[in-house]
Amino acid sequence: MSEVSFYTGVAERLGYVCRLLRKAQQSGARVTVVGPAAALERLDAALWTFDATEFVPHLRLRGEVDGSTVDRSPILLTESLGQSASDGVLLNLGAELVPGFERFARVLEVVSQDAQQVQAGRERFRQYKSLGHPVIHHEVTA
Image (cartoon, rainbow, N blue to C red; front, side, top):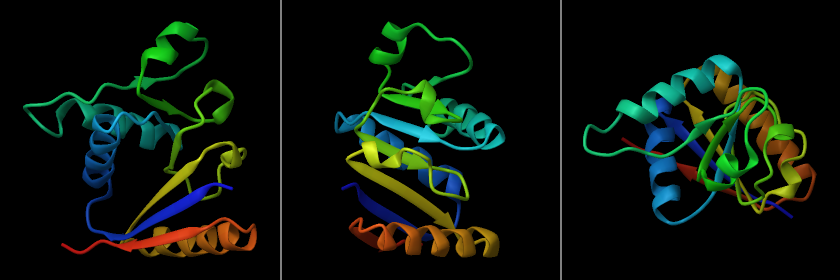
């Protein structure tokens, strides 16, 4: 069973995701981030610039990629799990459950204050619960 953590009420989602990924990487976790191409492009750019004194190592997967490069990258950004072999932590940036999320020990969901994201997040929360996965809710405050 995957443990699912929801972070809701996030005022600035992109910055929060960057900080969450930095914390995960510093703890030694391997994270696969799945989402739409546009969201991944914004995240890829933000991981280079969100903190002027640090770099969060990551790899944006597109097409064929050398397996050894993937193995050395602590954070993978991809549109689908088919390109990723990691089974540690999954961070979902999409509006729906990621097919195959069950192979990850932990799933992270970051939901902003946007009405559409809130509604989609509630639906994913219900789906995880109905599938029997333990769900932890973290309400983010400013």
